Image 1 (spheres, rainbow, N blue to C red):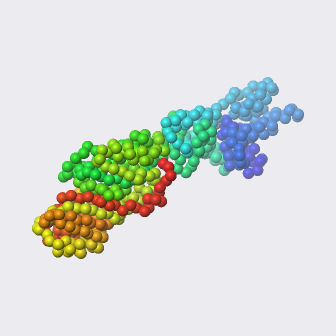
Image 2 (image 1 turned 180 degrees about the vertical axis):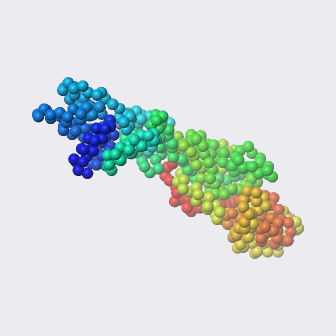
Length: 442
Ligand SMILES: [Zn+2]
């Protein structure tokens, strides 16, 4: 864009509209470098004044002087006074309504709103009334200007600069710790902190403890007024002072099943945390102390939230080992155990959705692999089975057969009923993918 074109567009804009320095300069925001829009606007008004008032020749362009004075340009106001020409007063900027004169106030609102939050990086977002946006677009169209920056972009940048200067925190476009959302119409700021994601593994040491508080199984006895989720998220919410937290686990054990061994992988998501640099070892100890022997957690680490869907998908295939105490309908001998080991180790199990979960899951046939089966007799009709299988296999059904919906099954192979008295998960394969998502801090 040639200088003459810039000047002529600026003159046209000012001849019909009252614009503050920033709003005038912003029309040419893409021109030049290392300048604020206020500096651009001031420079343009200065040039227009120089053209409108030639002291040597005694030529004055009163109209331009008046328009400049109206836009708040001090030098034009003084020139009119000197020439004893009545000015038309000072108007309010038609685009920002004086907003850009109050950037310090808006930045102070952000700083204040952020006082309760621990953060190193931040971003600013602005919500601007639609009519302001429309007015700005209309002006661009009318003047045929393609070099403009938007008010929104200037506001967020300028507020950001001021917040950074006051707090010493860094403006960051890529996953900032907090976002300040400035509502210009309401003159208020809300803060949204990036969620925290904490990976770990839990052991459920008792039967009758549900994984989630909302879990309700009418045919089973819930023995505790708590849940794995509450026992883990409660202390984490306390130390992070978040608004809420959710447990995303790699699968879920039945109410009456314990999870022992290396524990079940999970990610806790904490929404809007005020404190994010927590000591995870201390948090781990706090969870374990408070849980009073119902659960235990270990290996807490900060991770990226993208791990959550990966973890859920993974639980469908992750290798698990179960130990079951099984009551059978006849006395067994060593030969029966040998047959069980041989027929089930390496078998592909065809499993229709179990009758007990049919209400909430779609009826379909799954193919799952049993890698190995160990069997030993605890009593003539009491069997201990150690089953290592693919995730997603319903092990109780593998044992009792679910009225022929799971095949082959322990019951089918032995030719007698086989009922699970107790079931524990003693090993859950840890997804290798976790390491890709570990972060040094929250
Ligand atoms: Zn303005």
